[in-house]
Image (cartoon, rainbow, N blue to C red; front, side):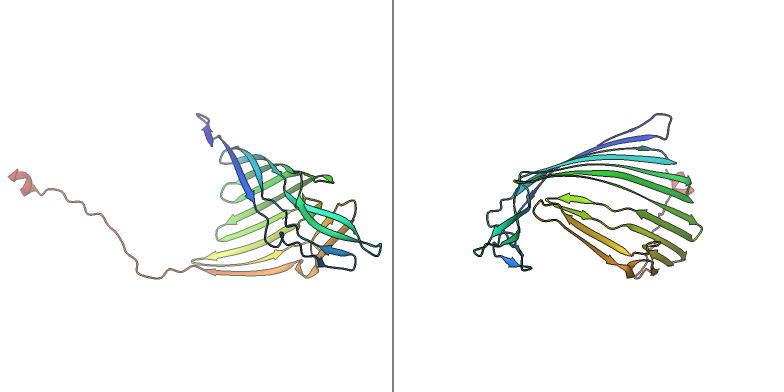
Length: 274
């Protein structure tokens, strides 16, 4: 990590680089090759020949700013050699029919590139601040019999207002999507509005989760296999516009001790004697 502050200015620049080597070991359930029938035409199956693999992650972060505005730019790269990912096959049966077998195997490679820009602005110091962020994730899944590319963008932000004992906070963000193997995961949309009041050691507030979303909470996934096309979404309408009440009370217990410093100086008699 390298930090540098400009002479005669409040601007400060900081660089940080991080490298991680992370091993992954297959679970015991993944090593079991017992077939589990899910439907008349589909089965799940593990693989006793799975092998551990390693992921290498490089991350670089650059931040600069002053008391009024700050920026943070980060980027990363991840590569996994022979990762454990999906392997979907059409298996023929003795009667001439076929079933879809969802398995896993050590594939060739998984690569991810990502970048993110974060900005914080103190519009009115100690009163109003706004944060904005945006970024992308680019994925490549190279299997033994497939190759998939996927790029996802995301944006979001939040704002906070503090005045005396009152505070108001709001945030919003779109879906955070990702690809691994042959599946795309569609994350949830985030949004919240919250207001609170603090009095002595107590604090009370009211907020709304997922406001302005009449369809409710939703998330899903999509299978990109050439053999099987699948898409699934989950909707929870009751999660929209949920009202949340909060209350907290901070109290101290036990004995309190006060410390003091005692300074002594020689008396006039001691001075005369010396």
